Length: 178
Image 1: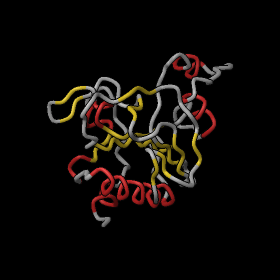
Image 2 (image 1 turned 60 degrees about the vertical axis):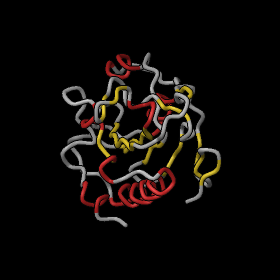
Image 3 (image 1 turned 45 degrees about the vertical axis):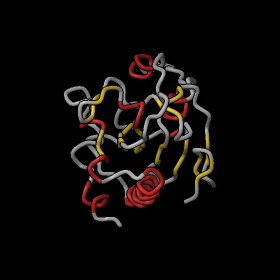
Image 4 (image 1 turned 135 degrees about the vertical axis):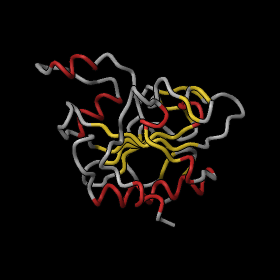
């Protein structure tokens, strides 16, 4: 992997409007892993893209109608097939963490990089997703000098509010990678 100005080179990029500048002199030192499926337990990558681009149309789906007003994003999405897609450059703050805290620091969006895995609490993630995730996380760890203890799930920074990446996520695959 190679990055230039916060963009991973050679991957698909969609320009999400849901970001802001990071506070001055803040060190990026956290990676947050999420899971997303829209509607829940349904895998439709286009709906996730639409959500992050503020283009989500609810149609007849009550769940989509309940979230189509949200302004959210992530730096990266890894599809079920293992495709890596970027929505926000890493030097900017994506809106992925919401109300959150890590080691006494509030608003994790300010100092983290968000990675969404297309998935849910009830299902296993795919081998292709883990391959892409391990490569991306290893790259980000080197790029930003992030230690293993600062790679967490959304549930770790928003306990009681979030459960992702869920009970089926294989943390050992990340921890055992070089």
